[in-house]
Length: 181
Figure 1 (cartoon, helix red, strand yellow):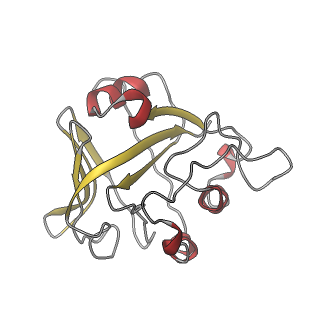
Figure 2 (figure 1 turned 180 degrees about the vertical axis):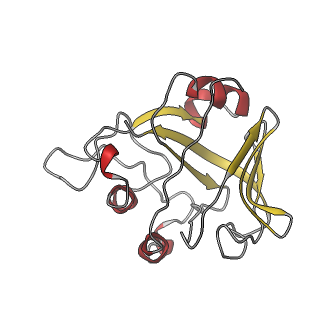
């Protein structure tokens, strides 16, 4: 895709440790949308819309590890499957013209939110048919199909862990792309 550039900032490995304590809160059907944080909460960014993937505590924890250049900027929801449908091409179209850092969050059909260990660098490869993140041992840490309906996760050096979901192959329940500037 022309004009589409990706830039990443490594997060400290404490993110996974902090987030892993919340696994019990992710039961299917019990997860509520995170409301936009109140202005009195200086640790949380202002969201343009409620998130269907990230809870308020996850948003606060993530925002504490973002680079200073995006601190204090609102998070703009550019794409979400519940509003924009399940289409990688649509995600690419929605991202055109946005040059700021992007946070991609997804929840699978089992209610799992993917966690990154931060133990090493990673890269992304995208084309109209798929989006892949992380690599190692000839497999991708995270793979999403062009319809954004199915994904796969395999052990890789980038995430330095086992499968990121309960199963190697999964069905996407919700995906969001937030522009952080």
